[in-house]
Length: 279
Image (cartoon, rainbow, N blue to C red; front, side, top):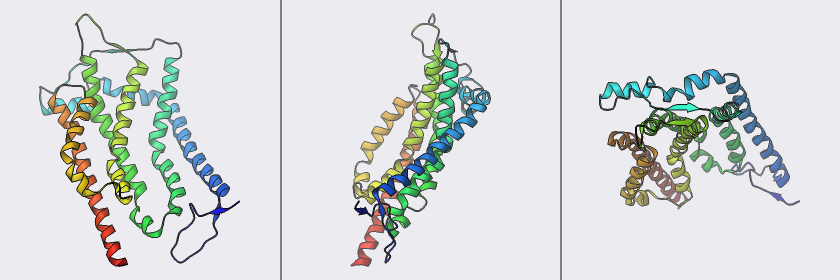
């Protein structure tokens, strides 16, 4: 079989032994096994502590004494949330057991994310040129930091605001809100993980800028369009008509976009220096 150089150690001035396609597949397989294994390890730990996780973490935003609601009461009486008018019900025999498994898997993914990403990065990194490695140094740290920051933002800001609005929204006072456990969990997980992914915007901007797809001039030119999109996104994420809630969600997204412009500009400056040195 022909030998290929994908994933080989591309050190300048060296010619290490190249790996075959099957060697790369075998290497990738073990990286994936370790990554998936870490997810299941944390999932097992989470399942063993399911009572604590459900009582202190999953169910916390459904109670009026949740940290976010208490902080809102301190800020203003108009923002104070004193009651969440809904009940959670389980209507299927195995639903609670299924939710325990689902929750454990979600917790496993979130806690294992740094290690799993590191394993994938270990497979990708040898295939980069030295200057590419230098430019992407700290990728694991920044991806992990932004992901966890987004998860915390989704859990403490976006999810409580959305749950409060949906729980207290009624077409008529005679209609009682009763949500299934799976509906509550899916809403909480979707909003939390969505924020974790959304907060990767600076990382995405970095790689797109390295590929020449995005430039800082392009991002600055369409800044106003991006802000409109962010406002619409904030309105969708927080169905509450409260303008304060929407601005609270929009501001970090605005900040992330500005950081992305700065990252793209840094990549552009670095590229210009490299071109000048080569010239």
